[in-house]
Length: 268
Length: 268
Image (cartoon, rainbow over all chains, first blue to last red; front, side, top):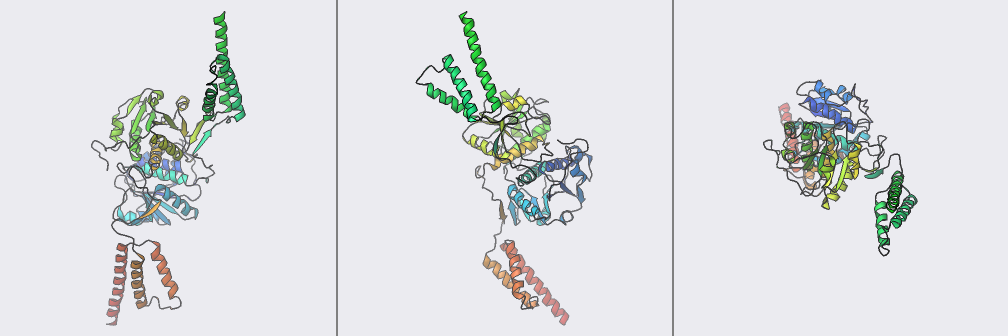
């Protein structure tokens, strides 16, 4: 899936936002950010004054093949320079104080950014440095802040995790785009086989009940209809497939055969 | 927010799912998983046959204070042992083949798990080892699989990132619970000040237009109504606050005063 030698062939899809890491500290984190970006279909990375300089080999080592994003990353002296060609800038920020700014959830932010990107405008997503976060001047350059709904009692979020959540929401906001099918909340994956028809299930139930009658399991006639119905309820519940029905037919046949042979042995 | 000495005081809220790491390899990843769990309000961790044994000090070092989750983690020889007291088990898995299983999105899965947890049943969330993922026997023990909607061209997901996405969706699925207010998709955060009333904005506009009339900026009478209207449009757009209005009144007053003083100097 991902080429380790030379990196994955990651191509930008349409107009996607630019991830701007402001004064990032650890090269490993920059690499992990590139990996998370690739997971969610973000491809443009800009670095503002990375603490240890750039490039750093350790970033490539922790990117798991998202090399192309790191190869194309640009370095900027400050936030103004990094966002000067962009039209709208959003920043993630846990709990800013003393400022007046629209606050979006990650989901709400992704939806707005998707709409703005569709109009062909350039969007920047600012992430502050580990521990310190964005400073007040950085935040004054943004249109809006994005605050993740997460546990307020433990809000220490790793930089790559913060990027991962926005990348995930960015991908989700495309639902039905990117040539991806929209995935329903729950679906039975059947791979090579098919869900059985009611007729196929009925054939199996006839087979099962015939053998249960033969072995005497259903000999209590007043209780028989309820017991048969309970078996129906169970086998209906799991959306049985044609392949599974073949296996279940075999199970019933072989169990019954074993009983018959044993009966014959015991009788002899 | 998070105590580095001794770790954060993380208390389980209600009945929350158990995260089961199956044959995890790197202790750093186990620590990063605990941190992501704490971010999303997951508190119960079980380890199935961790490769390097347990406990591992490096896990605590990468947990950023989520110590309590690691302290309480239990170790199990196999998946059967780890899930024996649970009622429902879900596994995250990128693209399983040759099996028949319900597939959920992360969001759909979180909603189902939330409902099951509300009924008081025990839920397990299985995550496979780095690189290899869950094997076929592990998956046969699960009720359903969870597949994240992410870039199919780059699906190599870090273990802690995989846990982070489920933890995030778990927290979101509580919307309105946990004593947290439900966060709207977009809201203006004003902190100490308030959005100005229309009357307060009107007072400022009167002030501004009076000074613009005085300095001659609006002297083109046919264009004057349109220019005034455009200024109104601009100042209405940003949901101006009372504090900002005070600043803007000052800006207009001082600019006008500067012009008057300069006019006087030039005249003298």
